[in-house]
Image 1: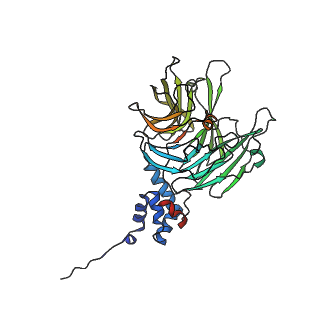
Image 2: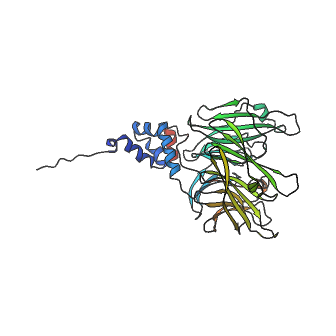
Image 3: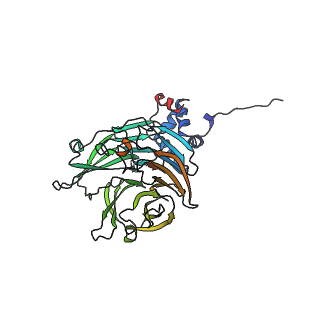
Length: 405
């Protein structure tokens, strides 16, 4: 009596099952897999698979991971993905390019793709760097529809946003070019970069309110910039409003911030736009009273958009003993702060604070002092709490296999 034995291989699996297995692999393993055979290469390089991989990666990202980007890359030429509560380093990503002033500022991170610019006033928002750390590819965006204007910093300034157009599966950069105050009243110019087409194009007949803040955040198809102005009544407070850009409709909008939120921001308070619980959020940090008291009140407001109306809800308010600039917040509710020793602005360290337990952790990463740092005191380190491994910008080919070793 003999037994008939049969063997099966990965190739015998149904296509859907093969895709589900590949979706669970890290990016490095996926890149290695493209060299196994033509079938695997074709599957992993397929745009539909890349889109599915991004969605799977986003839904399975570490809820407490933060990507820390150094402001001065001559001191540190890599970004670190760190577990916020333990401080353990998950991955270091070497920065493959140089900026003109050896400094970096994050515009936004979308689906594992990071848009960075220079901190220096002469190059910021003009020189742009699109980078996927996981596949180790980057693009330097040096072209523009407004070359003459971008070369004249004395007369023009620029605001940049980054986002995703879902309808065309395209990553896009929006740049607004404003005429400086004091010159003739000239309407702002707007251009859009398409990563899919690798081109810039002008937006015509666009109404754009004037804004001076360069820092913002991307949430669910829109980029937001926060603008504050000191109240003329002398109340020691600021008026607050938000400029938005919709990457699907390519329309700008203004969002009024209720008085109960605006009144939280005093002249000496720090504030930052973030994404939390899938919504745009505003974090405000204010002093407690006594001059030498390092504790601060931190309030986090969430904006909800329902039935065409925006509403704001106070999500968190507490007094924290550790003083620091609110940088970002993780999905699980860990606030990331950049803390300065009393009276020493050139040196800082990054702390995390679990808002449920009010426990702090020094993440072991700091900004050191020196002449280079002193130029950028007003610019803190930046962290991203939505970074996910993805195949965006992966175009196949053996040349990329060395990065997966």
